Amino acid sequence: MSNPIYRWDTVCFAAEHEDPDDLHEKLHQWIAKNFKLSHRGIPLHVMCMAAHACGFEWHVTDYRLGDTAILLFQGRGNGGSLSLAAEEYKSDILRIVREQIS
Image (cartoon, rainbow, N blue to C red; front, side):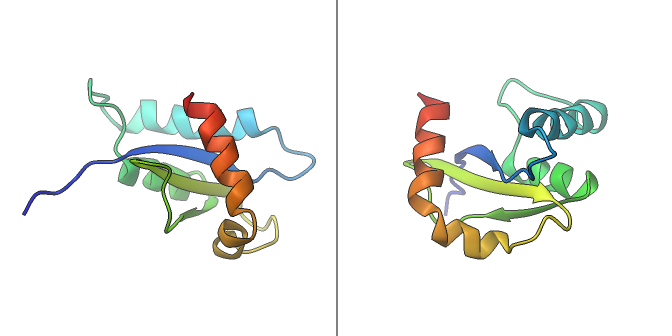
């Protein structure tokens, strides 16, 4: 049995006082410091490890956009449940990911 590899994208739920670009940058700095990058890109599980190590709450949605998995993240203690937000804002999340990958 083969193990399919999916592409992935991130959607950040930032509080009013947070800049989503700064939160994304924090993830990428952790990855650059702790993970040897390859031509194949960053595996989804490494992005989840980075989110955890940076103190973020994270959730991988149970839906995808084509072959793209979707990782939601937010600063710890920012409020709502990401699993509930994944369903409540599904159409908005898919729109954001569609715009990011096009």
